[in-house]
Every structure is written in structure tokens, then in C-alpha cells.
Image (cartoon, rainbow, N blue to C red; front, side):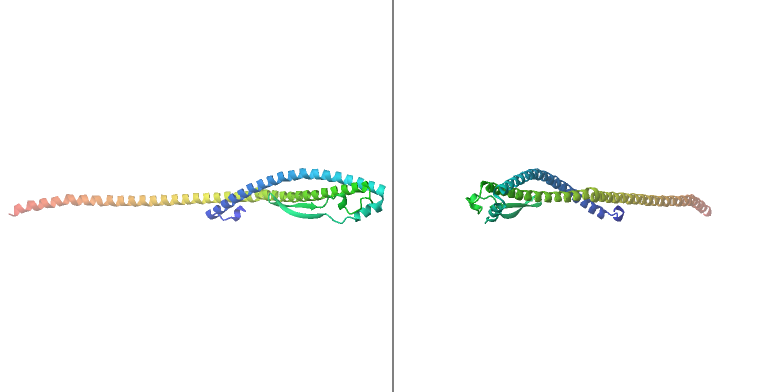
Length: 250
């Protein structure tokens, strides 16, 4: 990835912005992952309790229904079950846990009194009543287990998704961005060194040219100076000769 990036200051600024954003996102996702794990552990503890209660309620219900069948017969048990007029109602709502929407299951009319079960009190025995009550408890445990198990599965999926995102940022995206940043910085430093070296060479050439120009000017001045001195000594001789000739003529 690094060599595919053009080493310009604009690209460097863009990568630095992406790094800052990715680091913030990485930190946020880590906090979310840790929070989800804590919530999941709480739900897991609850799920273990619910599973234990469900297993116990199922075992009790099986014992009591078998006892009712043995004592009253299958016909009486099936007749009592068929007499039920009102069936339980299940409603579902949603709640948010760390951004994860999990179901909240509510049930009504699961547990009933003797006169609400539909069969006659005189026509049945206590064995059937105990079996009916045991299955009502079992149904409530099943509803609670369904809520907890569904929430646990959704939380687990969200944890795995968040972990993948954290790992992708930590082990893929951020290292690539750091590599790109380092590559551009190195290239820019090389370009800066080359520019400094080029400017130094230009300065040296300029100074050398100025030096040569000064030397040439000095040489020119040295050549002109003797001529000026010779002209100055000749003029007085001419004046003296002229001054000497005038009195002789007179």
C-alpha cells in the first residue's frame, strides 16, 4: 500500500487524518467489545440458572404427568388437557444492550387457578392438578429461557463482529496507514535533502561566479593603474621644458 501512495504533503495530511479517525474508532470499538463481554457474562450466568431451572421443571413435569397417567389413565389426562379454553399469550418487545437489540418476551395467562383450567374439579384428581401446575411452571421456564438464549446468541454475534472490526483496525488498517505515513515522510525528507543540496550547489556556483568576477575586476584595475602613473610623470617634464624655453626666446 505504501508504494501506491504519492509522496505529497497533501496525501500525508490525509493519512494523518485517517490515522487519527481510525485510532478513535479503534478505542471506541475496544470499549464496546469490553462492555459487550461484560454484559454477555451477566446474561451467561443468568442463562445457566435458567437452564438449570428448565431442566428441573421438565423433570418434575415428566414425573407428575407420568404419575397422573398411571393413576387416572391417558383418557382422563387427555380430557383434562383438551378442556383448556384460554391459551397463553406471548408478546415480544425489544430492548437495547450496548447497541444490540435483544427481545424481551412477556407472557400472560400461563399460570391458572383450578377454576380457570376448564375441567371440572369433581371429575379430576389432585394428580392431574399437580401435572397441570408443573407444566405451567415448565412453560414459564421455557419462555424465560427463550428470551435469555436469544439475547445471549445476539450478544455473542455482536461480540464476534466487534472483535473482527477491532482486529481489522489493529492488525490491518492501522499498520498500513502507519507504513504509508512513514513512507511519505521518508520521501519528503529525501526530497528536502535533495533540494537543500541543490540550493547549496547553486549558492556555491553563484559565490564562485561572484569571486571570479571580482578577480577579473581586480586584474583589470591592476592593468589600468600603471598607465595612469606613467601619464602623471610625463606632464611635469613637458611643463618644465616649456617653461625653460620661454625665457631663452626672450
